[in-house]
Image (cartoon, rainbow, N blue to C red; front, side, top):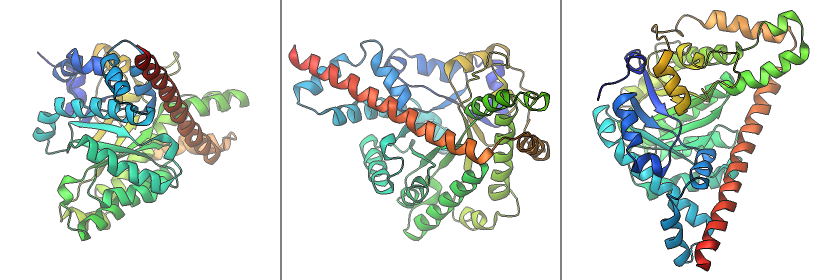
Length: 376
C-alpha cells in the first residue's frame, strides 16, 4: 500500500499523525492497520468518550461481556478489563513502529478514571495499576493537567512510566506541566531508571478554545470582537510551541533539560488535541495545516484525518517564528474584553466534567450489558 501524499507531507514536516479513536472493531477488521499503511498513522489516543462510544455501538464486546458476567465481575473491573484489552491489542499493532522510532511513536494512550482528576493519590495508584495491567512499553498513561494532576504527573514519571498529559488549555499551565515532567525525570534518574525509556507528550486542546472564545466574542458583538473569531485556538497553540522551544529546544530555559538530556532524557513533545473543527464556517483542516512544526504530534478524529488526506495543503512549518503575531491576537482578545484566565478555567472544568459524564455513561451501559448477559 502507498501512503497518502498529504499525510506523508505532514509526517515529513515533523508531525506525528495519531488517530483520536480506538475500538475493538477497528482493530479486528484491519482498519487500524490500514490507516497505518495509507495515512501515516503512528499512534492512537483514547479517552472516556471514545470508549463509551465504542462499547455502546455494535456487538464486538458481547462475548467478553458474557464471560465477565459469568465470572461475577463488577462493573468497574469489567470496564477496566475491556478497555485495557483493547489498548494492549492496539499496542501490539503499533509495536513495529515503536521499535523503528526508538520509542518516540507507536504509542497508545489510556486515561486514568476521570473521576480522579482532582485526587492526586488515586491518580497515581491507578496510573501504576494500568501500566502493570496493559504491560506494554509503548503505552502512555493519560493524566489531566489539573492542579492535583501536576504532582501526580511528577510521581508517575518518577516511577519510569511514560505519560500523556491531557486537558491542557493555557500556556501558563503548560509551563507547569513541563516543569512537572522535568521534576519526574530528575527523580527517575535518582531512582536509577533508564531515562531513554521514559517518554511524554503534552496534549494542548485547540478547537475547544475557539468554541468558548468565539461564543464570548459574538456576545460582545463589536466589529473588533467579531474579527477575532477562529483565531484564538491557533494562536494559543503557537504560543505553546514557543514555550516548548524555550524549555526543550535551545531556548533560554533549557538548562534543566540539557542536564537530563545528557543522561538520556527525552523532550516532552507538544501534542495538538481536539483538532476536529467545530464551526462549519472554518476550514475543516485548519488545526492541522496551521499547526505544522518539527517534533510535534497531531491527534486527528478519522473525519479530520480523511479531510487532510483529501484536500489539505501542507506547506511546511507554519508555527516557528509566529509567537509575536500570536501574542498580538491575545492582546487584541484582552482589549475587547475577553477574560482569558476565566476562559481557561471554564474549559478545564468542562473538560473534566465531559469525561466524567462519558465515564459514568460507560459504567451504566456496561452494567446493563452485564445484567442482561447474566440473565441469559
